[in-house]
Length: 272
Ligand code: LIP
Image (cartoon, rainbow, N blue to C red):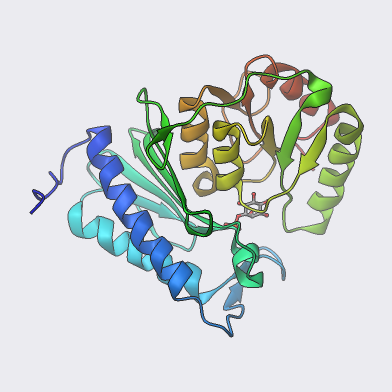
């Protein structure tokens, strides 16, 4: 019988264990409980920014599990969970990252859970059930995929970089993003658009992408994946000198990160 976790601990490995179990349970629900007739339950910023009943159910499962163990923690969830908490720990949750992929029955979706202490991510989990992989990291403790150490690729020549990206849900922003991608594409090996920021960031950490960037992400999209990528040896940020944010998120190993960040800044990837 494992001991009941200390509800006030801010020890990253204790927070990681809670995130791992919450992500496992939510991933199981999403994988095994997906209705054959899954439809759109609601839309958000646009008619193509969709929410399913499973996004909502997964967030409820995760928040109930965590608050049952740690009632004084804060929570920020994509589907509306929001509380300040009093412990200094905040859980940043995307219960289903890659919702459109999940709606269409495509496999690239994930559960993303990060624990922040005083505003800094110290533990993160990205669970990708259809890949059979769970990506985990604690700050300063390295990155692991299914228990194996993960490391990003060494920086390639810029023209050999495989670069992941994503697009927003508003047509004006998508037009601006298409212009940026159109300018980048001839300069790199290729572009990949997977549909889940959390998985894209995990792929940078695992060396399956050389780099990733996207404008318009929310904290829940990148909190856990960016920690994983950093612990796997990548750099993360936004515009030069800035942290990753909704304005721009960039992840790549040093030597590729800097020129990519500079090019994206010059292309205006940080604004619509
Ligand atoms: C998704 C992100 C992805 C982005 C999509 C969407 P969601 O998050 O993970 O990188 O390109 O437009 O925002 O909405 O599936 O949680």
